[in-house]
Length: 288
Ligand code: SF4
Image (cartoon, rainbow, N blue to C red; front, side, top):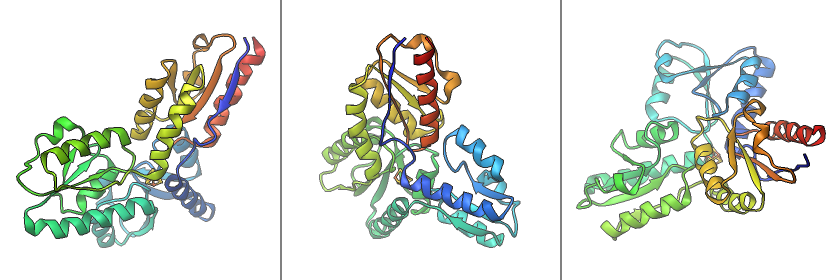
């Protein structure tokens, strides 16, 4: 079987994830152990690699018991309550909150402080319970309303002023639909364009990449919300898009002779993993 295989040159970790992983690895060069509050990246293969170097993941519930230690805060960021708890427990923080997320947190806080006395509401378009969303809601003392669709936005009380923000990794097309609906219900609504540029650009680019190959292998952890969005995007323009976490998930029966296969991934997929898939597929091509 002849296969033409290409890695999407724009896939790989986003800057925020690269920065967090670099800082973790840098710390672990001189120390044998480091806690991370939540998974530093939604990718089990990359997490295993970091765990072998000494990274240990803690949940927020486990934080109460941790004292006098060091912890890394990942790119998604955390609400103010987490920082207060860490301070109370004398825990040193390696803060890897992505600068883009940090800026969004500040914006949500200042708009909330301005709108709160006027009875205004903050709407966050995002995934309920996602760490970044929790961090944003925390800027409003828990008052922000999380919506995940036009349908859920329809439950908002539009008699009161509203400001709308998006989680950084949401689908720009979906956000535009939600923003349009909010504006139709409340023409003076404040709508903020807060999807990360890297994510928005990747959306546009991936549509071209996926439609210019006969088959797509999309590589990402199953827990990655950005992975889910980008996989659906590829699938919408190329029916033969397959989601894999590693080479074990690949079924050689998917391929046809002469296929032009594109390999791409989420903002939480490392380049080395795309290369591993590339080598595997090239092997299939040469061996058959
Ligand atoms: S997707 Fe964008 S905002 Fe989110 S961590 Fe990556 S660079 Fe930062």
